[in-house]
Image (cartoon, rainbow over all chains, first blue to last red; front, side):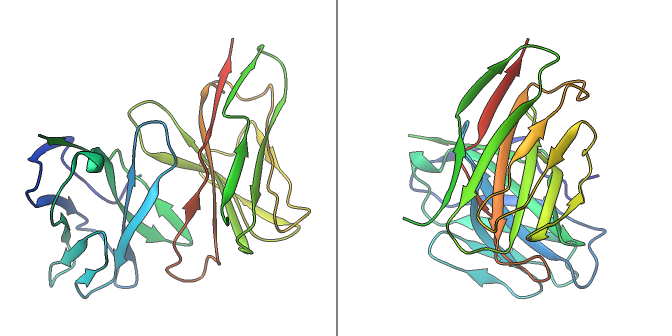
Length: 108
Length: 114
């Protein structure tokens, strides 16, 4: 079973920051949080991962709460090409455990 | 270019036939994975391999078989015992499985069985 819960869908205006929430209240202390995205009918693309600290790379920022029960993925300036399904995933026992993800629609 | 290739992109088979999906990587990764994705759902792990000549069952291995004779290749056979084989199949690889390694995905094979 998935260890994360996410909204089914979200909208965001082009040029704005997209903030995607994720709950992982049962996460263990040594389990990482990963984010991937999948554009329709393509293979998933890695975005970012973290354990305790906030992380940032060229694609996004990951904010993890102090109790590690939830996190937020931030796309700072969303473009139309960011329209995709975004998966928040827990890495556990050598496996990525996937939920159904959030469908993010960027509107012009 | 380094990456993962899957072929073919679309595959059609008659019920009762076995079919083998190809997955090749030139990233020099030790670990490889097969996932299944059904419409509107996340990925489910079928099999994974941490090293050549070794592989483990994932959550939904029944009706599938794999081999790992070479580091670069991890073919998946969908057998006639798989009750609902029509799905999108994704192959992935990573440097290993013991740490927070990123998984790289191929473009997928969409299998339709009628």
